[in-house]
Length: 443
Ligand code: SAH
Ligand code: SF4
Ligand code: F3S
Image 1 (cartoon, helix red, strand yellow):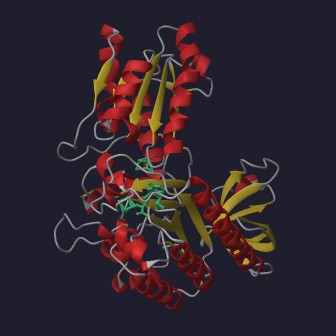
Image 2: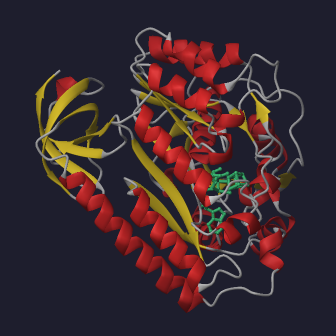
Image 3: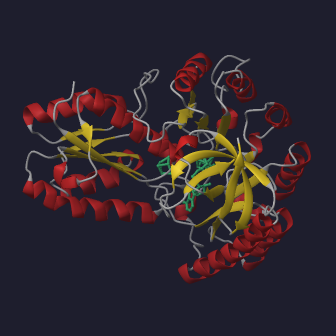
């Protein structure tokens, strides 16, 4: 039942947050709210925040400032803020004290309480703050309002137990908790019946899926079960932790026809000293061996990674090690970040922080190198045929359609409305560092 009220959700951060926003939207729509793009039409505006790096936080405070005028124009508007930033005391205090137009503060562990919290505000018009330290029991399966009809995220494991020394995630997302295998498979079956062709399994470390469940429940087993779901065409997953990326898993991925030809395996640094101080639990040599094995078992797979430059104490020699590794491993793609100290993490209190200018210079060197490698790799695809899932009009150029290859590369081609949601063969005709251009040659 629609209630003639409208909502808008502003999302920052990773896929997990984006998926949480789909669940927030699902709950609001069950309450009768409808989506709107315009803040001035909204009765509820929610910010789903991220705290992974400082610039993520700055964006949120900027947005909160911008929203003030909408509250002035419409005092009944409810402004709520949730997500990872709200699992930390300092930002909560700051929002509560300095941004008086915010009505609701909630955390990552209690998103399923949103309807109650909103009802409370509507009744009392008091400001409400409800943030939990940990989740209570099993999270109920929540409705999702998905953006895409053909691709869907499925959360399989929440939280993280790894405590990489730079990272805030374990503090804001809590300990690892796997969802029961049957409920994941059921969700996948339901999505497939609704027309979803591609699922992406989400977790901070999907490889540790099942560690907290019965012994036989493992990530390779989950993939094997999902591979059986009829009508489903593609299975993706992220993120894999190199330490837990086992031979058993690799062999399973190589064997299962629906699992996409792409492995995202964040390395963070090419220096063993830095890796150790980051508490990553593997060496450069071990990582290289993993990638070599992936390429042997899955010759057509793409491999992407993440890097952090300017971790405390990183010397020029350490950075050189990263550069050498990039040259050696020829990644298809890499996400590169400047180290950002996160208060409360061990690395943030180190005295040997790297100068901002040095960090920026290293980032540029790394990005220039990786862009060139990605470009050269993609050039080699010209003339090849790639299987692409047609998503629809491209955001960046609405004149063409886009989709992703099994190797997770964005591909542009001509508009063909009747093919949205289909897997098609595209002949690649041109390539850049991040995208491919081609023509559909058949299904
Ligand atoms: N669980 C995943 C992703 C975590 S966040 C993993 O372990 O890979 C995504 C990326 O953000 C990380 O891979 C890392 O490269 C980067 N990151 C995390 N904390 C950071 C920090 N404090 N400063 C800069 N980059 C960071
Ligand atoms: Fe952060 Fe490390 Fe966990 Fe990834 S594995 S979320 S980088 S602590
Ligand atoms: Fe994701 Fe940012 Fe939270 S990267 S888990 S939204 S801190």
